[in-house]
Length: 567
Image (cartoon, rainbow, N blue to C red):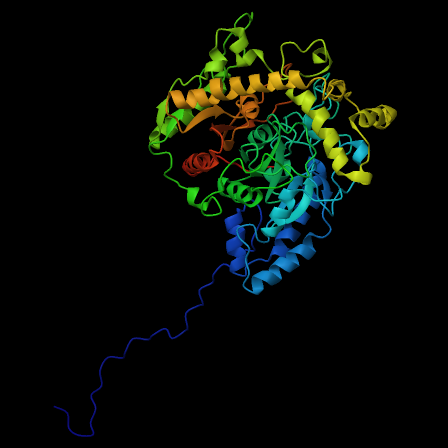
C-alpha cells in the first residue's frame, strides 16, 4: 500500500512510434478512353461526369487524324460534330437524355444522304455532292441523340460498277485497308494498291474496328454488311427488308436493299437498329415488321437465351461442298481450319443449352431438279450475263439498278449531278483518264441495257423464282421442317440466299483463320489472320429472337479482338 503523496518507480514504458502513418497513395483515376468502349460504357461515363460528348468526339477526331489516312476509312468528316456534341451535353446537364445513343459519335456509309456532308457513293460524278434532303434513317438517328461524325468509304456505288473492282475501292478515295492486316497486296497481278486482307463487301467496317467512331451504318444488297463485319471482327444486323426506310439512300435494287448497323457489340448494334426502324411514307416496304414492344431491343439482351434454343446446321454447301445437278465440280464448303472453328462453335452452343439439329439442310440447295436448285440460279453479273447471256441467272440486281437508280436521280430534282444511269456511264467514259472507271463499268452497262417496261415480265418471273427458292423452298422450309429458332452459318456464307429472301441475320465475331492467298504471297511476306465469325439467320421479322441468340453467344465467347496495330 502506498502512502499518500508517494509514488513507486517501475520499469520504463516502451517507446512508441508516434510518426503519423504515410497517406495511402491511390492511383489517380484514368481518363476515359473510347478504345473498345461500348455505348453503355460511354453513357455511364457521361452520366458520372467522367467524360463529355464533346470529349468523345475530340478523342475520335484525334484517332481519325492519326490513323484515318493509313486505313482510308472516311470520305468526309463533319466539321459540326463538336457543335452537335455541345448541344447534347447541354441537354444532359438539363436532365434530358434521349436514349442509349445520346451523344454517341457514329459514321454512315457514303451512299446515305446527309444534309451537311457530301453523299457521293464514291463516284467521281458525285464528288462534293450534298443532296437536297437527308435519309430518313439519318433524321431518326439524330432525333435519338446520335452524332454523325463521318461518312465512311465504300466500294463504289455499293459495288455495282464492275466485278473486277476490289472491295473497298472507289474513284474518290482509292483503296481502304483492313486494320487486321493494313498492307497492300504484294502479289504480281494484284499489286495495284489493293489490301492483302479483304475489307469485305461494299460497306466499310474498318473505322469502327479501329475505333475511329463508335459504330457505323452500312447498307446491304448482297453481303455488303455481313462480309465486312465478319472480316473486321464486328457485329452486324442485316435487317428484314422494310424494317428500315431506304428513302435517301443511293440504290441498287429495292427488292433487296436495306441499311443496317455495324458495331463492336450486339447491344450497340441493337440500339442502332431500334433507333432507325419504323414506317416511312417515302418507302412502301416499311411497316413489314412490328416494332419491338418496349420501343427498343434491350429486353432481348439475354445472356441465357441459348438455353433450349433450336438451332439448325445447314451442312450442304455451307459447310460441306456439294455438286449441283448437272454440274461437273463441287461448290461451297469450308476449309479444314474453318470447319474446325465451326465445330468449336457447335460444341459451345450445346454447352450453353442449345438443341442442335444437324444436318438441317436447305431444300432448294440440295434439290435434284435443276429448275428448283438455288445454287444454279445466281445473280447476273458482268458483260457475259448481259442480254442474250442471262438465261440461267437472276436479273434482279441489273434490272433494279436501272429502275431504282433513275428514280433516285429524279428525287434529287435539279440538283442531280447526272440525269440518268446512261448519263452516268457517259460521264465515266468521258472522265476515264481521271480514274472514273479504273476497273471498267460492266455492271452499269448490263443494267442500262435493261428496259424497265419491256423487261418487266422477265423481272417478275425472276423475282418470283428468287422468292420461291430462297423463302418457301429455302430458309423457311428448313426452319419449319425442324421447328428451328435460327440457322447457324459460318461467317457470311448465307448472304446470297438470305438477301434474295430479304430476311434478317446477325453476324457475331468469334475467332480468326488463316488468310489463304491464291496464288500465294511471295517468300518473306506472311499474311496475318482474318477474323472469322458466325451468322444467326432467321425468317422475316425474326430480329428480336436473333438478337437474343447473338447476344448470348457473344457473352459466352467474347470473340471480338481489337486490331493490335491501332491501339
